[in-house]
Length: 582
Image (tube, rainbow, N blue to C red; front, side):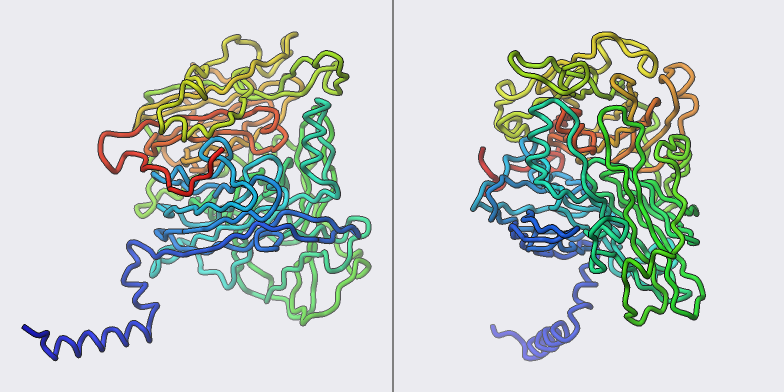
């Protein structure tokens, strides 16, 4: 029996209609999203900064790397091809990776790195997130130059829960080394000392006019129109430094943190740690003349362990610029924004306390009200003995190290997720990571005489769909620092923070279980503590580590193993065929 001619005519009409109006066809599929494909060619590229050229590792020859743009609900298929001599892996920082742990990216945790001449396809869906995240290399210190923004728009036909911006601009803070960063970290690990400092901070890869030998082409210029609202997508991609950021005579409205909406609040100064992202609204002034304002970022640090890059990066906000020329001399007369003191710990604490989840009917707060698994992590620096016949430059002739509950994590040579999936865990890691410090002490007072750490590849194993509370306590061993802890595979709720030692009797009574902020990276405050909660709704192996890269290299890291649930949609799928091999 033939197909009726009327049906064929309707089919032909609809086909032509979809071809003419593809956006309408995509909108029809808005509930499930679309598939977006990218190819990342990891290549060496010569880049000149501060009068010196060097070969750096990039994505598609770009520094910073190209933007990934998607909508909530979209699937991303990103083929990464390694054309450089170094091993490569890429982490999609902040992406939940629900049942897609094979695409998370940290080397020797969820995958072995991509070797020279090899490729790997990262395949994942963006679920329940919208805002700004980012990607970066997750092996050694290669993320110094290999990073870029992930821009997640709301679902089609869905609006922001704030005023629609006139324009959106990524602002990525980074660091620039004249030296090879692989040589920097290798030397630090060999000598046991703190690493050499970076030579400059950068905004979108540009160091700005305050550094010696910086050319006008190396100044970030944000050109704006009067009376408009701009959405700045802030990312701190710096290796080792938390930063304050400000624009002279302007204020911001914070609307998002780590791709989760927050109750809006105004500020003139932003604090952002490595790994964190935030969307902020900038309302421009009603100016009719050509006018420029300086923007600047400089570090926050209470570190006693070694030195840090105590410099300032500057860019320029330009009104009605009409392509007017710029020079270092022409902006010397501009007023520098007044940033907090380098060690402004109270400002950082007050800043962190301002964040609250938006918590409306469309974006409800789902913080666990009861807890089935409690953990207390003592987080900080320590030391290792100097090997025989070697002179070490760490504290008192030792080597710097770092640990959680005095365990400095040793990276395996087989990826933890592969070992777990193929039943070879006992050969690769142990499941006896301590839930509490084995030796209690006054964490924020006089440090103990013995600062040596232990070493091991230890994890915590949790069942599917249980609730977890972790209190992370900063220690004063070899100096009290703010440690930005990043958890892969989950968002968590920041339910409390405080100064001094955590009091398990009185402090939980002050928890915010109504509208705590939801994040993937939070600072363990210098001389204080922070408490988080999350639900283990994502099977896999999930890294948790300090996002100050030298602390990560020293071992301030651990991993959670979340077991499969009983239902098919609660289990980790098999690995892809092109998963890199060690």
